Image (cartoon, rainbow, N blue to C red; front, side, top):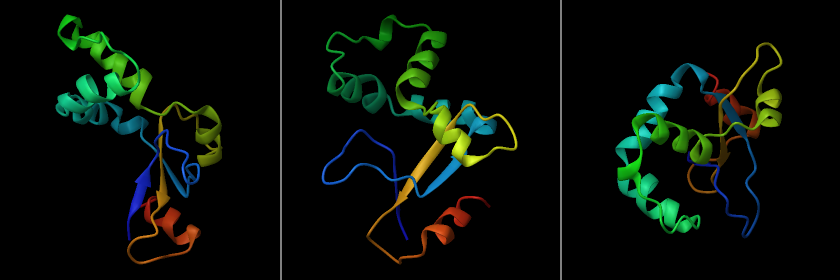
Length: 115
């Protein structure tokens, strides 16, 4: 079984969140992981988003953290509210089940992410 994480692509269909996970408890680890992929998050992806003069070398660690939060971490309040009404959630990550690999129901897919 495979899952896609959210991206901006809408062809052939828009992203469908089959499972959503709160990541508030691991946000610093997530940011550190993104920071390790320098060619992706500070070179290619900024250029692809239209930031042609982007230069990570001029940024402080605090500015890099904010850049990652603003551009690569989902702060979709509506999606977070769909995930849980029990507590306030700031950061979420959503996944769509891929057509590749073993197929399970959307409910089973979501349960796999709730463990």
